[in-house]
Length: 464
Image (cartoon, rainbow, N blue to C red; front, side):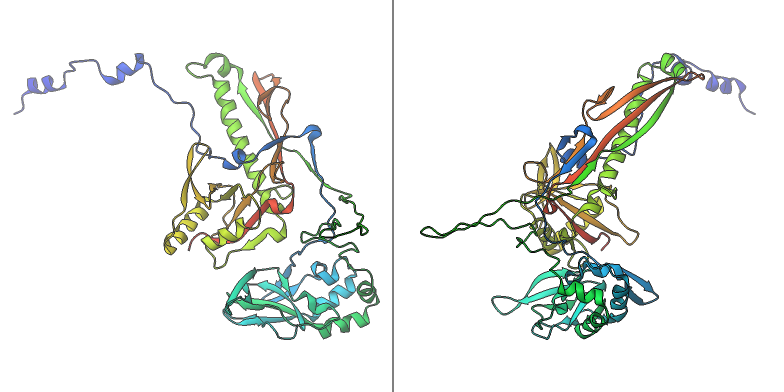
């Protein structure tokens, strides 16, 4: 038998419960949180230039060469074929656009496969063919001062070598090209090239005409040379010269990111304590716009840094993951590299390679934050740099600022209803449903003033 009086004593409430007490208590609240906010180092690293009229023109010296472009291919099963118009990237065919002749040349390329370590071209052998790297990675080696092989370059998909084989004068290979991975190469023999030239009047006229590099001498950057005399004595005739400019310089128009923020007037009128609802809505909307702005600065095909780096400033990794050698090669291609940007997974892969070699990246103070550094250059995380499904990414290296002919960000300050520099929040009115609308806009772009201001390390493996 149970004691009912004992049960009543146990269930009797002796004080005010917490559930009831919460009804008259003040609740401590946080502002609305947002997972999508990142460090946005790129926006902080770029020096921003006021762009009047919404357009920024980059004037450069006249360039006499088109630069070494890459060729593209189409595949049918295991077979590769060069896209015929892409052959105009070869120095001997620059400016040539006869479709029939280019088609005939594309048909003459032979596909050759090489295993890792196999020699594709040997130094000293007759230079009798031009080669296109369809797939894979190969190293370029030259005999060093002390007799060993010195690595002088790397070839990846789309590169070409042996261009001098299409010239009239016979020559030999100056360097040895050796496959580092399995490579597929398309080769065109000199004899086949001249056979097509004999049948094509347009190709013969192109080869017999003035060189595509221009009649004026050029410096190593392809710019029209400025004639200067030095080391002379007496009264010789001094050369006359002038500095020529590009006739059609590139212009960057400001891009825009916009959205319409809607807030019901009842919410804005009645629910503003302890935090202003409109301000919180605007704050989170601006965060989203800034994230989109950084994404566009990296990935936009018109002005994004990944797509606008000069082809001569794009280099592949030596072995896959980003090694100290790769970072050294990347930053050595420009003076005063100010910042390196990489996906956090690429930074982690670089750290693993350093640990494997027994070297350790330095820690640098950058804007009050401790970041990974290499050679005194901060390596800043940027999750807007994509990582492919295969786990490969890219690493950017930049020189920044107008004074150093680097990379600059473009914006326009002084907008109507400006809320932050270069960003406006404009009231658009109240609808018949009592919903207030605000137009949130920001204008931006980016420009590399000279080609070597921006470099890209491509095909960076992050998972090995």
